[in-house]
Length: 168
Image (cartoon, rainbow, N blue to C red):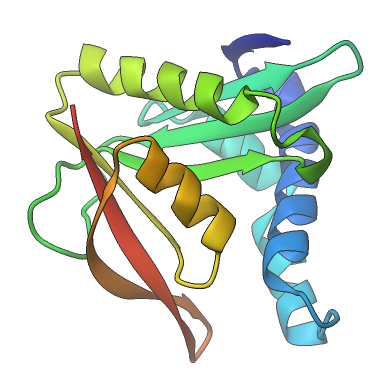
């Protein structure tokens, strides 16, 4: 496994992993058109390429012998939905489920936190679905603390998310 910065050629792989992880994590009982439409509109190659090329985004990928198996995206200048946070957000953190438990998440997170520290951030924040217990357990084990709640919006639907912060 190698960690490296994302490049333009990674955009389609990052989009595919995003769709796989998002649908697998949040659509447990079946896929409805409402959610499928969201995922297919949100996680496109073009959108991922724009993020890779955006200087306010820092994307690190994990690559094995076959290809990319996970990535983490840090967004600078991202206002948190609760007070007490810096503007440094872990905006996306996805690892293919079949690669969980291999230390990829810890290595990607360490790389992201090193970037945040090098950028002068005093803390980093993120949100996760309030029912995503594996992710919550991971973040708490890494030293994050829950500091509030917000809602993730898709059209007029809101979904409870927890806000976590890590002091650097």
